[in-house]
Length: 298
Image (cartoon, rainbow, N blue to C red; front, side, top):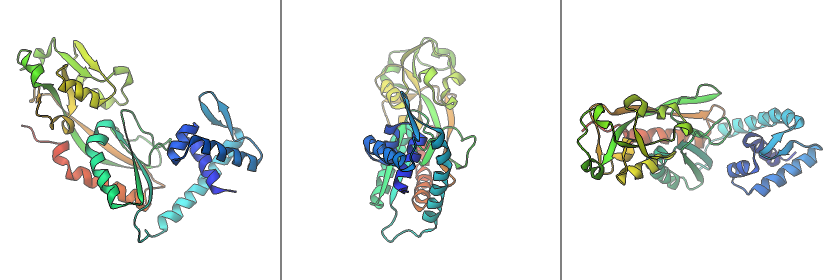
């Protein structure tokens, strides 16, 4: 039986869509469909039912999945035991991270890491939503909350601080803000409440219930740009806002929030050379950028 076809079977079973499996496998979705058809012809039965929202395993597919996963685990064990070739690291590592952290902190450093390992491909999913290890959306995930369960290796990657900011132009148009009571009547920029992907993003509730919003967005980068434009006051990560000299802190003595990033990887792939090297590099990256993530009070 063709292992490549079985690999395509596993990815479609995990993602549920041809497009999702194709993205993970770095092929066109028609290739996934062709591979599945070849496998179903080989085993003599349908492994998926085609539904409006994607592909679902049939009973035969559900029986096959654990056997294929056992083959995958055996293959990973062989790969883990094999020494790294003289040509260095190779293969694909897909990293899921929050949008701001992935874009501002990780992207420049990962680009340099990839240059050091020409045969290694880094996919960075910097997104304003959760990226799931359980769905095999990524190999390593950096999240705001510690994974509660599952066969994963987890470490606390770093703390980081967020502060209340407004542009100099916004502050010049309004009376000085010296206490929480002075926030009354001000316009805020924040997340869309019913689309929050983590309870850790509910920091405004700890400080003040805004009277009105100029802009709400799922994107922290959009919130940053709206704050720069003078649209209102926002809680922003210091690693984003402290770079902009046109922004000023609001209530610096009390409007400070600390959150944490957690890094996780499936236990079965943790010891692969490319995963181990990338994992260690990410830890080194946050140590080197501590002053960006946890800048001192000024």
